[in-house]
Image (cartoon, rainbow, N blue to C red; front, side):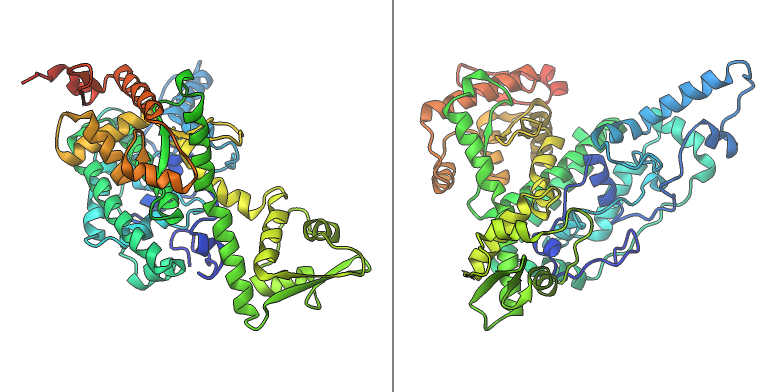
Length: 502
């Protein structure tokens, strides 16, 4: 049972459970919304709207202006859609139902359940952490999100005062639920996820407690929380892909100096990481077929009278029995689809190994609009776009990782908060990005080994150019102080003026 929607969840043995996700959650604010719902209860109906009429009804808004009331109402509603976050959320996801209303969580009741396409993966990841404390994390999130009465928060809480109630806290989940969620992992994957969980909890606690985040206004605090959570969706994908998988990042999203070999290598690196999804689907389908048919080593396909069978069973029936799923919506699989995918001829048999059958099946389904592979695979580019890490931000097939201005400033803020410092050397920061987040910007033995495994090779000069681009970008956002021609210090824009060279 989904603890937020009350709806029955699919069995853990399903495809979504094996991959860990079914589709991306957008925008990143709704991802954060769903994460907070693992800690807090809410009573608001998703159809409930906060507007001029609603505040008049509850008695917290009163006006004697009758002549221009329609104009006042329109202005008020426009103001609130913007400052409560509804405009920002809808701008990032045009498919949201217009009759449902999503807001930034100024108050607990502003949290409402949305489809959990990530299946609470970040919450379950936290639970794998060695020193994870649910109640402690719940308290930190409560203070970070809900206990702020400054600025716009003060106005909103006046308007909502008749609805303000005690924050309703959720109870910790049974550890067996967490263990069940991760049952699809191999032993090696489980070890990697435990390390990632400890890192995630450490980063999240730094964000929730350090003044570099706590002293900011609500909007920046919530944006940074959403960025951190979304970044760990990408980290999950990278860690699941393999122990020595790294992201080759361009030092800036668009720079003509990186348009050659480095750009090609970046695109190839991104494509290599994205193969996680077809690989997982292949492993899942292969495992499922062999478990259902343990004595079968090959599958015989026969096309007779326009109907295709697998080992004597109709193709669609074979899929339904093997994968225990029914197709919902979309175009039905036709015999012609199967005939083309498997190269069948009327009246002739064709034998496939289980692995080859699965590869052809995935390719067939991948050419269909709305395929499972398409939805799951879109998690990487969508999450990357949300935090300005994957470019170009369109439907282009040639995508790559890059350190944008927003992402870089956030990473520096988090790094210095974790270290408890105002300044540090640029090289230390770059090394930390690689060791902690598998982000490669400069030449290093570890990065070179990882990229060689993906048949990617770059010269020292190309790496050096990438570092120069990255350095210039950091200088442009006031996060860099030059000590010498080769020595740099990173800091935050608000701290830069206080730097004194010792």
